[in-house]
Image (cartoon, rainbow, N blue to C red):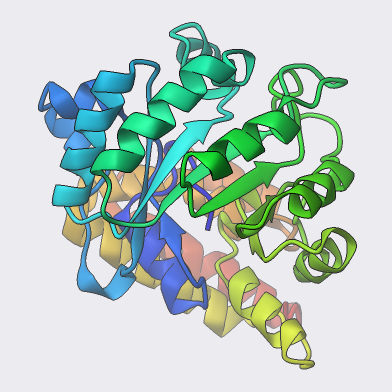
Length: 313
């Protein structure tokens, strides 16, 4: 499971693991936030045994700060440490972190060297293909990462300038795989289970990372596993969908309290019900709901309507 800002909290990660994700990753964690002891930053790394092994992704542009943040993350329970070298968000890039590292190979190498020497757990890097749509900085930086002792790299097949627009270039993932001796994980445009199998066949990558397609759809991990085993990728029925929603809500409630969980679930329900019949009317009905019971009542009415209409999936 890919790191997703504002999404990859503990509740989401546990649900992903229960549905077959081989590994889950925290959302991006600020290196500066860690060394400054910011409570909110540390909350991103809150973990339970059920989700182990947890990969924690940190971002920053100062080698010394990244080294100290790596020590803190590992001391807080990170089983794998991941360095972000691909985030396209402006507030991250303007600090020299995330995708901006693709333009600074010397700085990138210093960060990895400092982190590697203090990191006793597997170290990985997540990168984009390059700064612009036509550039391919990842080809050189992936080799730098391998030379620094990184254990695996993840390549998102888009450039920083693309953001999340356009199509992911899987060919670049294949080029990186052909150049390295360490595992390469592919990422980008895995919107259906079959895409994961197709990416591995096309690129030769060693694994696949799934991001936005898992929001409101934790079943995708199990479906990919099924396809990999030569089985059918079964879609969830309404009962399974309701059970996952309730489980997600219960986890959020335990971790954040009922009121905050209800607000979070309003947004998540948009994803859980996406493409289902009558979903637009349901989404409109829940936009102003703030209490738990009303939210669950609205969900039950919606699912009952689908059942009555014979919408199995």
